[in-house]
Image (tube, rainbow, N blue to C red; front, side, top):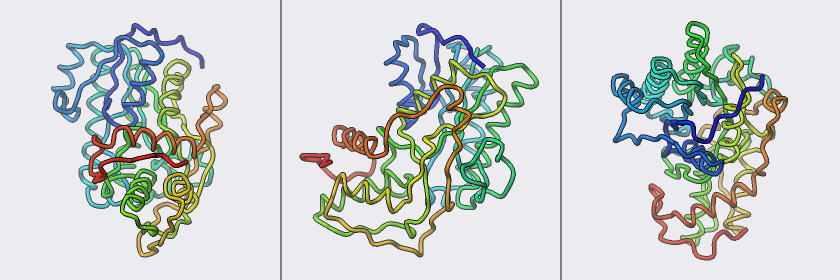
Length: 330
């Protein structure tokens, strides 16, 4: 279903603007000429607090909402902080969705995660695979929270007629990513390990698992473009997968990052550590039929992320490197 485009002077709230996705959405909105972008840092607004969120919405009255805030992390973070992952995420989308209903938001886009699908779902995963099997145990609390967000938007559409839609992005990476080894996802963690090996003069680095798991990766600026596209062009009940439709093994991913940043390095795999789900490839035919496909290739996206990292090294949490001379190499 086609809808009218959001006007550049519309009031647009990006919930989670300091995160990987939120920062990309703000960049894309500014590039498109939006002049009334609303943001609130965690210090300014606790999105887990319904009263505080209601107060903020009452004062600011956004017309459109990109709900991309959340507590996120990789396998290690999910295993160590399951209560935090399920509580924070359930509360964040509950408060923002409810306030959006109370204060007349014209349209809201909620972003979930591809981990909502069953661990052994048929590949590639279509939107109707949701709730057809058991989840991946290593991130089950996070996945349950994200599933509840989809159902929350569906319930508010059904009961109140709210124009709330959901998108399910695949694994993301890019500028403003989290490079902390204890809490990051696999791609930024590999980037950091390769950088530190190069910096320290080491030609071997250790990587968790066997390298056999298959993953799909989407450059975050492509996701931001897809979010704007859905806000302008989709009003359906069901969620929409957002990805590339292409997959790569973790081994191939690591080799690509090494080729770009530290060509003399080699990998020692640690098979005692978990691989996670064996495959996580999204079927993106629904989004393609609407008229959008991604444009950034994996290697190009990795190079662009390294470029950003080289310019923002001092602001990246946990990085001990002082500079990235003559970087990237690829």
